[in-house]
Length: 145
Image (cartoon, rainbow, N blue to C red; front, side, top):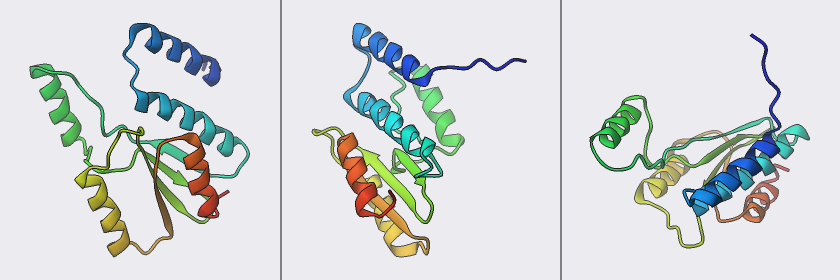
């Protein structure tokens, strides 16, 4: 099967237009798209090795179907408190939790950070960020880029 080449930036801008039109795009999702674009650029420049987003905070709606899907996600291993973004850099593992300016850190997210502090032996950096600039600052201060 032939793989289609997709212009990710064009797709992201069209997706943004769609969400803006139908008002289903949250402020945090908009931030996620911007950060994803920024991290893709860092990856292309070989400043980071790889990165991914873990969509643990997905909202599935109301009703029995939403409960069923939520249960399926828990059975598949989705866990509360895992940061939104994980980055493998050349010497570090970076965890970034994205928040809107009004957003607040959950108990589970704080528990994850405390677990890292207590039990890990790898070098890691953790940040709570509300903008692409804060993500960049976290990576610079951690000597990742």
